[in-house]
Image (cartoon, rainbow, N blue to C red; front, side, top):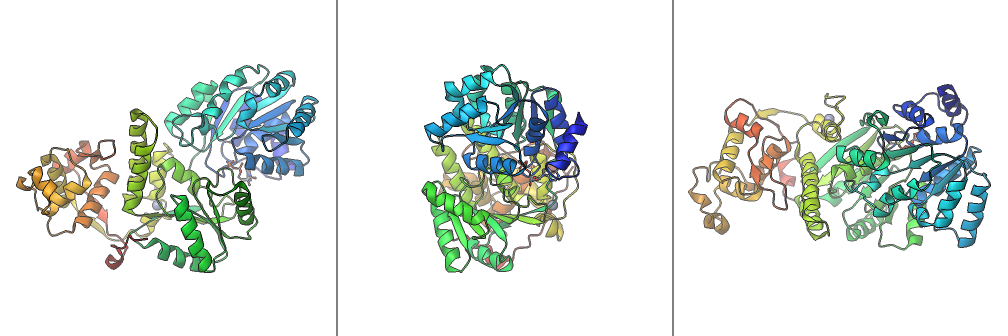
Length: 520
Ligand code: ADP
Ligand code: ZN
């Protein structure tokens, strides 16, 4: 059976061998097991359903939330001589009917369908009547309420699918690997543990960088000078930011397009096409851009502001380097980004439990920006990939690793200050107490009477804030979840206080003079 799959891989797709996880996934599907494939972006998920779809009799139904992606995939299959089509709202009712009739006549091996198709009884009844090889759920994390891109309409397809008894196996595909999402998909689609295929998440051709304390526009400008003619995406936090930055880049003579949900569909299409065809090398966009964009030569992804979660970050950053060539993923951090994300969570309509969950994810994102450990290791650890603990040697923390300084004594002072403050305050207030600031709120809580008041007065408040962030990022100090996370000691803190553990920090490579400039 695998011989056949390999033959298809060679003859139709022209690839020599399977990539990690593909063969296993294909085997499970061909044996009619519901299967979940968890692979990073660019890992080769499409072949996992395309090959069994070709090997098995009947029509494969591919459910995708992305209309733009559907057409591309269908075109690609047709170019290989494989009969494929799509059915979605971009077609007129007449065209839809004609396609349904052709599907019923068995003309297609692959049918790409948007989620809302499953609300159509005409579609469902055709599905019930035709032989089906498999059903694939692309971007399957969208069915999970824990996913960062939950779509209720996607989740309700699960119920519709149950009305179509002639589906031998369902395959779910995602690049989101958090435990909660995986468990949710497994339960919804009845996928056994044995049929979850998870590949390593490391993308060896990507270098991750966190840039702090630099003027962002200036940074982008000098980066562009060094990377002329290279294709890249700059993600902004808001539409307004995207508009402003694109205007600025164009003024500098950089061919930049923009994409966000505030533009007309026409404008978005034109921008996307200009970018895909390298007429515009740089795309300035909000997170509305990208899901399903299959552009292989994206050399850099710059996040102009910190995203809300590591899931969102890794997925967006992962759009770089699909061709396997070296690419850079740069996050420009400023403390204001944190405020914006907190505001967005606060304003959202989620219930309190969900908000707590979002604050927790946000904290993991903030920690990524403050850790001194290898960024690649941090990401892999976050996604539960424990296959490799070696520092990557490529990320900004690995590259800028210079002098190692023992800050155990300072750490002890900070931790004991947190303890004396009753573990009831956040980072800003703790830094003020350590500094010995003359602050009326501080006084109203009588924090100036503590023995740790002013104990680190030789430092600036900003330095102290940075050190506390560092302790949190390294999990040497805990935080309670919430909008204003209060600092709390954890087991590691106790070990540091007892002198059982040394705390090392790496001197930062950023020149002090530039540090204060966070203005935009
Ligand atoms: P994903 O959906 O996981 O992001 P894709 O399915 O779009 O990834 O695949 C990414 C790229 O890798 C595509 O250009 C695809 O043709 C290529 N690819 C997939 N499988 C293989 C393989 N076994 N050998 C070589 N290239 C592959
Ligand atoms: Zn590293």
